[in-house]
Image (cartoon, rainbow, N blue to C red; front, side, top):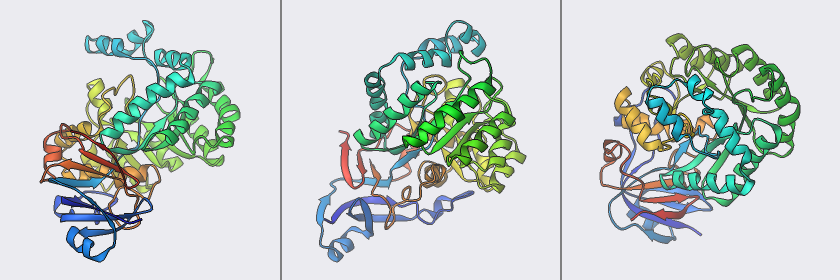
Length: 410
């Protein structure tokens, strides 16, 4: 059955904007008083509402009031699946404690690992579902979720199975990533032994159970070295996994590995330099910046403006996690980043729509066009510029997933 939805004051399609490099607001395709025709979860036509009404025999889903329509947002990097809270860590951090001092007091990532391991499947599922639905209500219609707080075969599989369960249970599309190589668990004597365990014992089961097609690793001094990460990712690629990498958050060196392995995306990049920005561009690696982590840690933002000006494909993700990025509000974080790094509306929205889709190897979403998924969000306004101007305080009023209207805030 065809459904014609509209009219919308403005439809910002994101069509015609480049996949790489800068994009001016003057290149935005804006359809005034527009509508879309949906059939079988896809957009089959888009244009002026009255013209579409005359052209199609369709059920009318009439929108009363002034709304701006955009593609559904895509968050390409989250750690939504976890148990416990790190509020004590945060209080100590803003009081001046170092990460090492927090670890010595029993905090840090191992505290989250302990809580996540002790949570039952039902408990972990309930906690994760609450975060997913909050994200969805903020307009995120596709979200990546990593494992990485289990750090052994049983618990990593539990996390990935929770994500698969919730992908079927909740409206948004969930893309699972195996981040078993987050840090070395306390029960392993070396990183080499742990990475061997993942390759030999865990990843074959992940493939067998079809729990994830993506593998990630955290390249940092307190996690995994560049060279052992390259060997690990090479083996994962041979097993058929796409690879993405946490790199250059605190120290440099990881982006070199992301380029060498030709990762789908390189994420974080707070300390990346110009030569490595160029290296990632040359290997067609999406550069995903995570402003939520910079806000949570009180660190400088990744050089998003430099990445764009060099010709990079810039995605913007929330990094929602219990330690460094607890806010979990993608639009607010992207808005703050845009003000700090001088990213215009087109560039900021590209980073959370079609460029974010590319970071997940998805080509059927992120723009409002014929044959694309009918995922879109409507803001109660008559001017698209209000969205960034209000810095995340203007939330989507209506959200559609696969053409179905799910949520209306009042």
